[in-house]
Length: 141
Length: 382
Image (cartoon, rainbow over all chains, first blue to last red; front, side, top):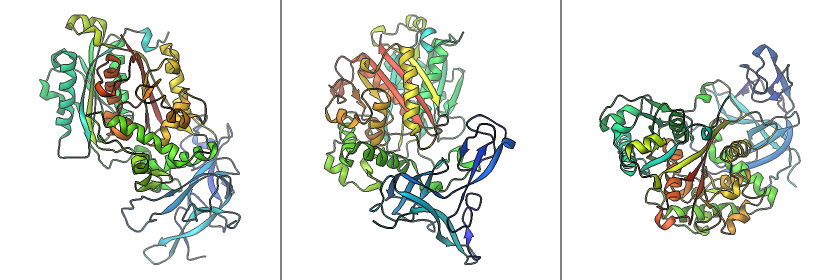
C-alpha cells in the first residue's frame, strides 16, 4: 500500500473503502462534493464558514452509461469502453464516478455501491497510481 | 418598477439570414458572418447604414469578433460587442439586441451568431475545482446518464428515444441550411456507432461552423425605413435564467428549462397549448423528451408517446425542430440560438416552403448552455 499514490488526494482518502472529501456549510448545512472553499453555493456564506467533511464511500446507483467513444489525447488514460455512474451518496450529494465494472451488463439502477481504489497507471518512478472508483456492493447476482 | 420586454417598446424581427451550418472548412469566420448578415439585411430591405447597434454571439473565436466581420459592410462607427453565453450565445446576442430596441436606445439592431470549432476549455475548468471524472465525462455521457434514468423510470426502449432523431433528420432534409440534410430510418439511427450509453452517433448533434443573423426593429424603425410590416414578427417574451442548487440527483437541465419557460409563458400571456412550433435544444435525442415535458406540452414520461403520435411533426399540433433542430441542422455554438429565431420567423411568415408548419402563429425558441444557463424567446405573428 505504501507504494500507492492517490491520483486525487484532495478528493478521497487512502482507505480500502475510501472516504470522499466533501464540504459542508456551517451556516445553512448544505453538503456538497467536490469540495471548494470559495463560498457556499446554496447561501453565499464566506469561505471560513465551509468545513471539510469525510463522506462515507457508500450510496445508491442513480444512473449509469457505458462510454463507447472517448478520445484520450495522452494515450495513457482510461480507454473506452468504460462505465460511468451517478451515485447518490448516503451522506447526500450525487457524484459521478468511473465504475469498476467495465461493461453495463450487470448494473441496475438502485444497486448499492461502494468506493474502491483501482489501478490507474504508474508515475515516472514506476509507482502505482490508484484512483477512486465505485463498484457494486453485492457480487454478481 | 421593473418591466418585462413586452411592457417596453414593441420589438419585431424584420430580417433573417444564415450561412449554412457545415463541417469545419477553410471558410473564414468573416465570410460566414458576412453571408448571414448580408442575407438578413436584404431580407429586411435595409442597409448596414441603417443598423444602430450590433451584438455578436460567439464562444470559440477569441477576442473582438464583431468588427473584423462588420467593417466589410462599410465601417459606420456603431456600437458593437460580443456576447458569450456557451451554447446560448446566439440566443443571448438576440436578447441583447431586443433589449437595445425595447429600451429605446436603438430603433434598429443586429444580432449575429458565428463560430468555428476550436479547442477552447470552459472557464470553470480553470477554477481549480476538480471532480472524480474530469474530461472522461463529456456532454454525451451527461445526457446518456439522463437517458438511462429516464428510460428506466418510464419503462422505455432505446428505440423510443432514438425516434427523435428520425423526426428531426426528416425535417433537416428539407432545410438547405442544415448540416445534415438526409432523412434516416430508425434502423440507421440504432445501427450507427455507439457513443455513450444508448446514444448512437445520429442521436448526437454535429458541431461544425456557420452563422446566423437577425435584424430587430421598433415600430418607429419599421415606419422610418419602410419595412414590410406584414413580414415582421413580434417578440412577446425574452427570458433567461441560470441554475441554482438542486439537491441530490435532480435533473437540472429539465428544472432550469421548466422555470425559464414558465416565466416566458407568463410574460407572453400564452401557454403550451398556444404554441404552433418550438425550436429546442435537442443536442441529444433524450433532451427533446425531457424538455417537452418540462415545457408542459405533455405529462411526465409521456414525451415518447407524444412524438410517436405525430403531434410534434410538421403538420401536427406543434412542430418541434422543424428546422431539423440541433440534431440535423447542427450546433455550431454561437449561431445556434440566432438560427432558431431565423427558423421561427420564417415559419411565422409562412415562408418555410416544404417544411412549413400550417397556420403557424406562435413559436418558442429554447437553448440551454453549460453553466448552466437557459434562454427562452416567444415570437408571434404581427
